[in-house]
Length: 599
Image (cartoon, rainbow, N blue to C red; front, side, top):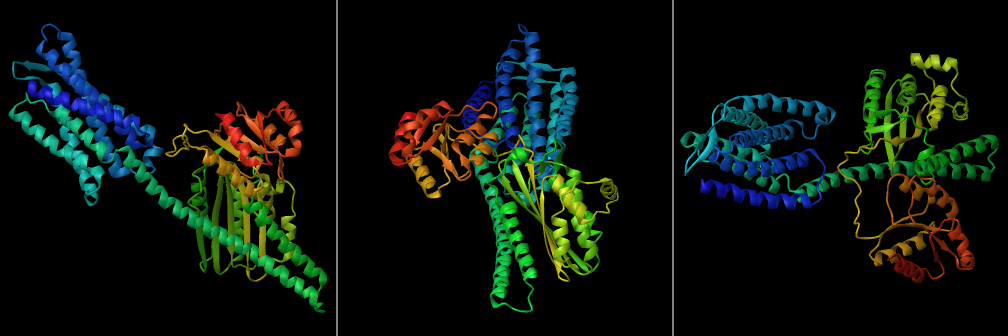
């Protein structure tokens, strides 16, 4: 008995130390770490209960009721550990990395509770007997037999998991599973030899400790997640580079066309109609303007202006459904290709129906007018805070359109009428209706086409990202440091200002647009100070301050940067709401003085 208690107390002490280290470190919020937290707490609880069991069994004549309660609670604790560990091994063997668990989380948790309460009856209702002498103290009977049977079932389930994962046997997350199987076999043998040897709970606790050093070490998990995200970032960077290259080519080609058209005017070619050249130049400049202002420029994006509905939809599923539908519509001589950016958020807020109608109508139009060749769908995204810009490009090798028809479509700015709605119900949608739909959902559309050579359609639609409160990675900051946001549209000066703050061990973020600062605050970012340049191309510090104050519960001090000639009216800036000011004529000295005031 003394040896058994020594093992229990030693294991308990070591497990408490592991728990202190584990819970004192930042942890990734995922299934594995949540489960391990439960196992750790239950193991400590069970070891304490086991010590109590030894005492109350030895003194059961004096504490019969307490002895009965403590021993049965202890059995429930061991049962809980077994069930949670087994379900965890099933999860990592069959469901890890899949969406099944996330989509059916409530059902899985409900099944766990049903399993637990089903076995609970056996342990609470069945008889439990006790034995105690100077050497051994233990409980036995049908209740403990039920727990032993549960252990055997766990071994069978774990063996199935082990067989399923035999190719990954070198991975550390399988070690606890192997050890549990060995431990259960050893415990079964010891139980037959001498039921007084109390090592089962200590053995489970040992597995819990081993799990910390294998799959559940927070540092290892964070490193693993960082490596995983490194590959995701590399893939995203590659997609972004390819997208920007395509957009660069989109701008270069019309610029080259304009140069050629200008040369034609210079040569005064008698076969060239000036009106046609001017129309062609306008078309090319319109295309450049669209790419620069509607596709690439995110500086003026204000999430309040996004035409958003409260309906949340699965963006990835939307494009999967579109692809399945269009593949059946294209001609046998046409190759249909689809490329969806991996940066596309899973869920967005918006009008799912009209989004689907708009994209499908463009693709149906391409399918009708393309008898051979290809139809390509490319979906690129530009994410900024809680906003996602969808750049949907459809390119085909169909019959194409003349410039007059393109202009008629792009200049269309009328709402949907009754005839349009009837066509929507039958999916008989032409490009005129498509343009109207895109206008309704707040998007823009560009068409580039040449008769006999094909067409390219670009639709740009801003949607709000449906944030997930269970995201693994949330932005975390070192709260020992002050955090400052600077708005200055002079990049050279902004870089210098940021450097001064960094040299003073202050976390600093810079932006060239006041609206960007407003969106950051609206999106939940926190700063100790916001510093605004008084005069910027995109608006004054006063207008940005007004926008910031319109945000609920905004109370961050806002500082204005002034030219030397405005120092005499600094008090007026304080009257309108600025907490302090910084002079720009000697920026380094002024910022250092401000930093001293911050502290």
